[in-house]
Length: 355
Image (cartoon, rainbow, N blue to C red):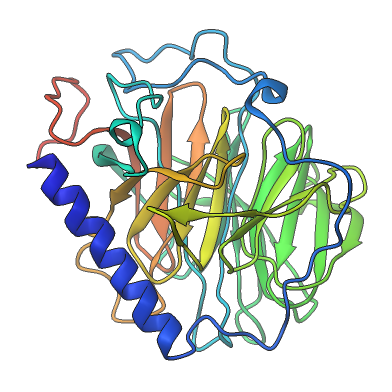
């Protein structure tokens, strides 16, 4: 039964990708060309990754031997901003399998199910591009232009209230965010610049700015390099000090087929979690091989959704203290605290939200 569901989900995703690609949906006037360097993408050994994560116990305990593993993500689109754009989110290792036995030893991704612990409020006017937790505090990047400015904000995770907000006055479309040490890195979609913020001042303070070529969608930090998406099927790696390319891009594939439109990213241990724009798909990626190891369907969340085709799933933040994720969507009035487990696995977690 689980295998049948997995095959059906993967087939549906690949069909959607093929249809969109056939009509030029993923085409862009901007090439995603990356300078080639002798550096290599991060390896599992170099990441000093924590032990594979499973479903949290009750009460949750920090992952044993966990190394800093918070990244962040964000997202966006390749087409022009049509009343909104870009989407993505990430997932978490499945319970019981530790995330190591992926797809029965072949290229089939493992099917995960989303376990909702609780529903939280979220601003219905926040066009979420990135979501990040650092030191227990929740941050969000929203994208927009003109009369709806892009922002960087800190949120109360329990109420969804905006505690602090910085409107970016420049006419840029903000995208994904992540933390590097005590600084917030924030991408822009087509503006080819990344902001670096000090999160402590009341309205945040810009401390540095980097330029780059191409689009910016999602961003996360694995403790060694920044991992970046640009709406294509590639993950790119950047030096957090200089923001220069570090190594060659890695092509992301699912069952041997390219998976384009990678959006919001979240680094957790040795894996990268990603939203796939304009789908409800959350994928877990091996950043060394580019292979999609696991996937989850989030189509049951956020229903009924806002009456806007751009109000898609996007935004994922990993909390190492609770071993859970927060996920939401663009202009969604709700945010979810979740974790992932193997599809079909029994679940007796007392914190699970009853249907």
